[in-house]
Image (cartoon, rainbow, N blue to C red):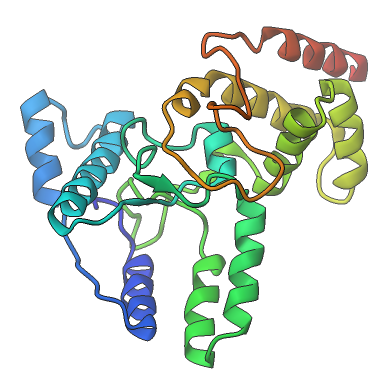
Length: 256
């Protein structure tokens, strides 16, 4: 893609080699540039169009290869990304089966560390190297070889977001109660004002992105917490987050 870093590409090659997997590398540069030409988009405009065109082109290739090979496209999106809508609709949002749909990012990191510890030194180093890099879809051009698009700069700390997700969906707590719990759990990392901003961002994204969850692929249920719209979590896609945001506004006013 147009923002693929050398580190990520090298990791993919190294991990596949160490695991004995076949690796097929396909550049989407020319196809995406042709698409920009077709729709009249300036490639220098690095807007959401620039990003989503790549995610959708990648998915198209994977889907067509799955048809050709008689295989399945395995979805990589995890529960945290699904909750926050951090995926391109009909891009990486779609797959034949979503294996991580019920596993939050924090747990995925823990699973990878646990798995890496049991591997050879070379494979362990390669796997842990993935965790050492910032989480990024790598859809924006690099700056002197460095990743400029960092997911947590946009949607916030995954530790916080996964905490909020459980408090809201599994326990049904109010913004006021969640804030109180977050202050206790993260007192050494975030102050009250920072937590309110993070919680406001979570509510906005979580509620506005239900339309993606309503059209999500099948996936395995791993934890008691699930956002499957087919029986676990049902919410209208046009619901407003206003009620929750107003409560957070009141909590913020109490500070001033």
